[in-house]
Length: 372
Image 1 (cartoon, rainbow, N blue to C red):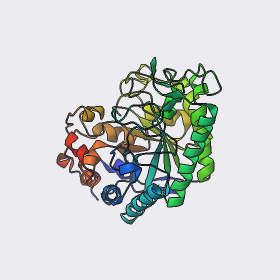
Image 2: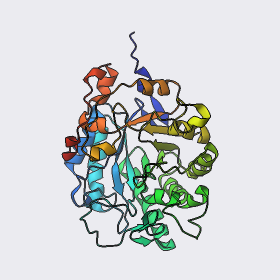
Image 3: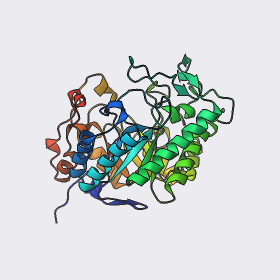
Image 4: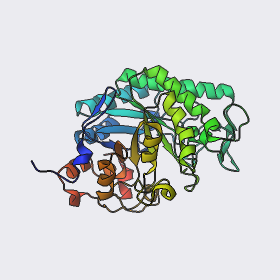
């Protein structure tokens, strides 16, 4: 029997009732092709094509909860309301028919700016009415707002389970609402949702996770996407040491997150090189070591630059997978998420399985202009 240098990516994986045929995840990528927040057949076909291409697990683009301004673009999909949920039922049924597994990424964009000329009709909300340190935008959430948001996350998760999704993910990264509570630069609250420590500022996230876990029951996997960096400031680090990272992430796992999706701009970069060197554990590796939870790593897989270059109109060439397979072989993390490469090529997984990495096509920003 012949072996491939990429066999490690094609080992099965199981987390509770979720069984995956390989370790490759389609990363959540905002596409804004859901007019008025309602996904349709074109969205279902888009995801089903990746399922047919044998992606192990598909994470949807961010889909927003039922709050007055939970989105920052009018064509981001909703995960509430009869029409939108019917659209998501089309999506999950199509993915299952193609042999795939999928979870929605449940989201609230907080006070971030998306479509600059769009007027949502209500003030945006965040922990302290800030979009970045010293930059006011919108309003600070009251405790009633916070309770309503927690309940909305839980309702969305319950609807995901009812519709037949295989897991759920909460977007707690990249400077959006949950992450704005983590970040001292955007959380200046003096009540129980603020505080001097990252652990104190994680209360909102822990309440969201616990409410979602209660809504979906003990078995359905619940993923939480987290990041050190923010779109407002790439250099931000919430946790400067492993001890600080443990104080941040362990309570969130204890609240019910059994999968941590650890976002880096480049997955191969070590998180604490001063401790374990330039080839040391990445963010997902440290998160797994510190919490015992399963982890997903992500960041510029098989591409020559990070995803923010796409928004600047820059191409990304295809690169090798040697660093990825080395880390996967030592079980540094459990799953690897692939983003832009799967927009350009729905058959990326099968090309890798066949060892045809020379046929991988890279990424061109023009691919963002249509949903195919």
